[in-house]
Image 1 (cartoon, rainbow, N blue to C red):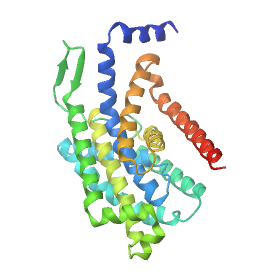
Image 2: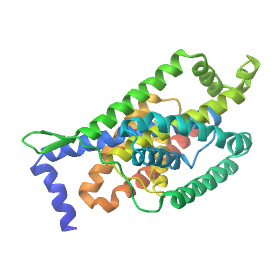
Image 3: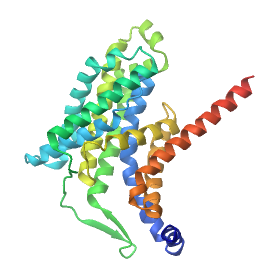
Image 4: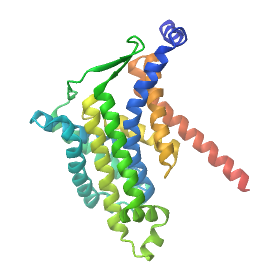
Length: 303
């Protein structure tokens, strides 16, 4: 307890520490938001709660890591992971997801949970259980007399994540497929009546989600570490972000992603690095309780 109180008092005695924590949190939160946006697409368009979301992220990280071992420049691993994970997403949709779209919630959860376990075990067999990362030879920027450090590798990762998010947003707003995706999300039956091939929309959406996660994983392996069984942590974070922001609320997804990133960094500072991921679980429980209270108030107001 004394250690926790000492860590809290440090935040007030040296306010610059707060800036460092927030900067680190915003950097990792940007990648959380990127993965969560893919989940929001699948959830909103197909009504599938993908419990394998984080495993797609880790798989993309392994694609970039393995290509780097073969001599491919690390930055090229991001588009490579995007393309390869798109293909994997399409295969998984055709073999698994397409069979559970019209089923009940429990069936889709069970199918994606099994998919998550299978993907984790396959990655463990292929790459081993050790943590892996790509060491980028970039310098670190220092501010405020060295109290705040910003690794250029992380800054580059955030920039790539922002560029990818902007590209996806532009695609969704301007392309015919993006319009079809939004129409299907609003009312799939009406979209079919208007001549939209919803099956094509579903396969495209799930493939796009896998590709976004793959790119996020390729960025993560360059600035942090990956391991076959780390997928669950990114799945939980994605669910927290989407549940807090709501479906179709892109600004909310970004804000929630940045917020959870900062919250985890504060939790790691106060309670220790071992409790960092526990913060995400706690936030998920708080968000679910808050949503439940909201629904009860709404029902009471309608009576």
